Length: 265
Image (cartoon, rainbow, N blue to C red; front, side):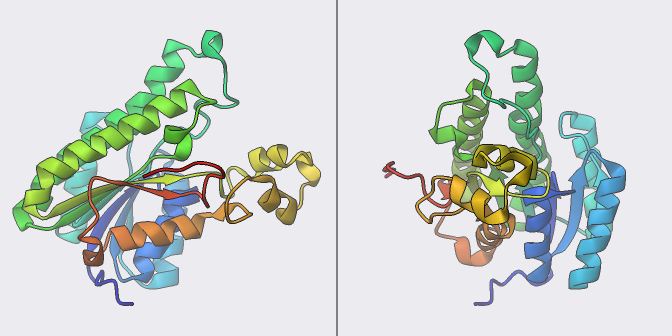
């Protein structure tokens, strides 16, 4: 299936590693030119070079702190200068250690809460606010917000609140921007294997440092019987970024392999 993404232009935040980097690869493979954003400049440059070399697309790295409004505006301005515009925004920047290892109420601090919400929720608001005028002016665009299945589970106060908040932001943006040709969706990954969370997954498997890839895959209680890989989440995002996803907006797409025993409708 041709997704119709050739020569589209995208910003992906949190793109130096993990799911964000996998999304960058998936979009570039479909012919998208990219600006990758993250706070770590050196790692981000290496990621951009890797994506460009593998897929032969224009890929630029712009070090960005989505917790700072001026930094976000610079990101969008530089993207327009480098690529000539923006068609797709993938919001993925977050603090992956927030809410882990699921502290109880007494140990959930204000500082941890606000630091994470500033990056993941208000950060998504900042980037969307900066990009939206460009998308509405051209009459087409996609915003995909990466949240998490913590929106549908307890265990972590911070993770649940931040992910529910991202879903609420998504629906508000979808209703406002939809008449202007802009679709906005939220993707909820579950436990997803990435290079950066390998130690946490090994711990969850019960085998610690001796955990094999197969034991980690089996340790996660999913309907498909294994952990989801980062590139499999990225495939979902690539479709949502495409013109073929026009019938989907404002809604949440779970990409966690299925929560056993839960019904959502």
